[in-house]
Length: 133
Ligand code: ZN
Image 1 (cartoon, rainbow, N blue to C red):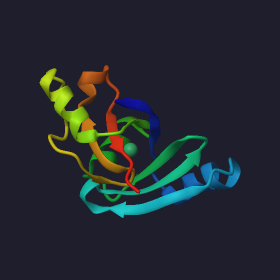
Image 2: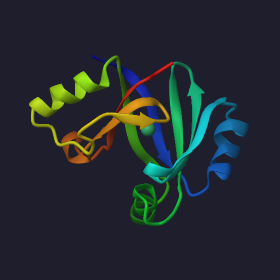
Image 3: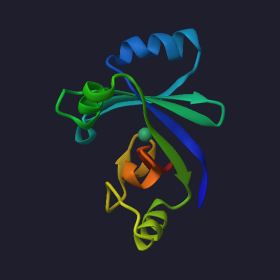
Image 4: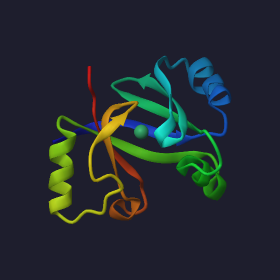
């Protein structure tokens, strides 16, 4: 079951610069940050009420977020819906013929995650996440 918007992903050129606004000016606490090599990003999750904002800095120009920045500049990169069972959700979407980026859930900063192809959501890259303790 999809429960809520877990986070909004924002592509940024510099995580440090972006934190100066989101953390220092807005006062949002960073509750996780990591370099995720297989996704080619340095990322931070900030808490905003019961949701989060994820800032994504590419590790290089040839990464997915690097190419996104080149094409579209900084800004909204993806939406993430929280689910209680990402594998079941993925199977259900697959059965309905939804175009996927990931065929299997994988570990991400927000827990067990997968991405759906933006063509399936009218141009919005969409992530599903099952938070893990
Ligand atoms: Zn995300």
